[in-house]
Length: 86
Image (tube, rainbow, N blue to C red):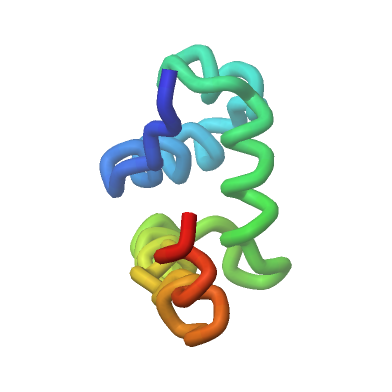
């Protein structure tokens, strides 16, 4: 089973559940996710003064997503030559 990123609606549900006083485990059950995903999401995107904000969390997740990068074999002429020999 592949990784399924959190959607904005998942993040909004997390924010509402936090305000309702639910634990990470309870939120995980509600969303059909493991509690550690909720725990990590809160840790990455909460502040001491403002708490968990789903819009900020979604924007931060978008910035952290991996971007297409050139493979090492494509950028190094020596490796590229060796690759053609095989």
